[in-house]
Image (cartoon, rainbow over all chains, first blue to last red; front, side, top):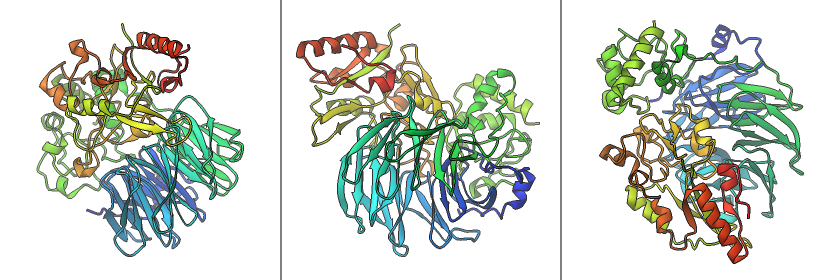
Amino acid sequence: MIRRTLACAVSLCTALGLAQAQDLRGHGGPVRALAFEDGRVYSGSFDTRAIVWSGTVAQQVTRAHDGAVTAVLPLPDGGFASGGQDGRVAIWGDSSEPLQFEQWHGLPVAALAPWGAGIASAAWDGQIALWNGADAPRLVEAHDGQITGLVSYGDGLASVGADLRLRFWDADGAPGDSVGLPAQPSALATDGETLFVSTPTGILLRVTPGGETVEQPLGDRPLIAVATDSNLVAAASITGEVWIVDPETLRVQVELKTEQGPVWALAFSDDELLTGGNDGLIRRWRLDGTPLGEGAPERVAMSGGSRGADVFQACAVCHTLTPDDGARAGPTLHGIFGRRIGTAEGYDYSDALRQMDIVWTPQTVSDLFKYGPDTYTPGSRMPEQKVPSEADRAALIEFLEAETR
Amino acid sequence: MARMKFLCDADRCIECNACVTACKNEHEVPWGINRRRVVTINDGLPGERSVSMACMHCTDAPCAAVCPVDCFYTTVDAVVLHSKDTCIGCGYCFYACPFGAPQYPKVGNFGTRGKMDKCTYCAGGPEADMTQAEYVKYGSNRLAEGKLPLCAEMCSTKSLLAGDGDIIADIYRERVVTRGYGSGAWGWRTAYGETVSV
């Protein structure tokens, strides 16, 4: 089911005290996708939302995907496309519903790119879907294994995948040359001529149009994002470090410590670099490395270090314990005991949950994790998770009873 | 206590895929998922090598560092395992893995939330050793039987070695000295932060 687009969020941002903030705050989970076009920032997150930002204001907050938003692409008409963990692609205008929302892939969408008058999506099923803007997309078997990067290149496309290949595609989607890669690619970017591949070996690859590959080690930890503008390349690591390098020499010009945990997404804006992190923030940086915002406050550890708090860690990425749901993927658990299923105020539940007749008690919460959501609350968007140990379930319930009042 | 590692001697791999087949058969790995695969680097170029690639059970594993639900754990033998009860199939570990090890089934809740699957070093999972519950989720637990991973056991050229890191590194060193060349223990620096010096 397509969920409602949340209304223009000026009031939301004001409520969150963000008017004067320099960082882009509004996502409730890791930011997985970023793009910048014509003065606006486009983002997608684990929280299942895609947001269009004007300045630091969340101008359009959309929710359609059953799972994380993994790719965003601004469109020439002012709209945008989003790709999700659910393998679906949504085309958004400025209305509250997507103009188009279809299942193009059986596994998560990894990247979106302009393709002729339409768009192309690449996914973990190894396929590229070519959509001309009108007909059903044409699927191309592109890589043996997951595709992790796709960009518009020349009149066609370039893609990288788990088969350790960089492949080129012409304007009709026919395969062209391919280049062997020395390491697993995690993302792909281009300045229009040269291609840049981040790898989890900590090496940034520069591939010339002739296929010559140059390796630049940036650190010991995996690189998971790369972005370019006409004069610079940026790559990000799971440690939150970001390097801005010269595209010709690959010499590091600026090194940032974002303190965002893994930085999953990068984009250059006019004269800034945007970093999308595990903390749900989109931080803005001058190109000399100066932060424009303050970042996230240090996270407070869950109370007590009890077993129940430990078990809850697996829930915390989607649920808060406070009245504010923090724009996370799931509803707040505040006041859960005694509450009927699917009734937390302000959360857009699936139809399946709304129609169930369960009241959350220590017993029903325990049963949820004994049998798992697929069995106990079928049709829920909640990922299948179980807590097989009866002692752990009891500890979780004890923790929730204390923390959700 | 042994520190279990894999070592892929790329100069010996003949791309026969016996390791891939042995793994699928031993663990009844579902269709569409390969816990191990053979990839060719520099295909058609000087320096072409084939390597058998799977989870290397890294020291300071990146998958564990990025997992939002903390489903990974390291055993006393230094094998990196995960709990499928906790995994939410978000896919973050795949992007962080230098070896492309995490795999995801196409059929899951909404087609997207299938549990991650990867090489267990034939060491099962968090369930009790050698139980049916462990086998169904993770495959066989050869380590608990005192055996090494079947992929390495099956390797006809002994390109793929498994066992205590010090012992397999010594075997590799001896090989390189004997034959007079070696392109390195593929992936060791990335996985374990060290190389095998000869």
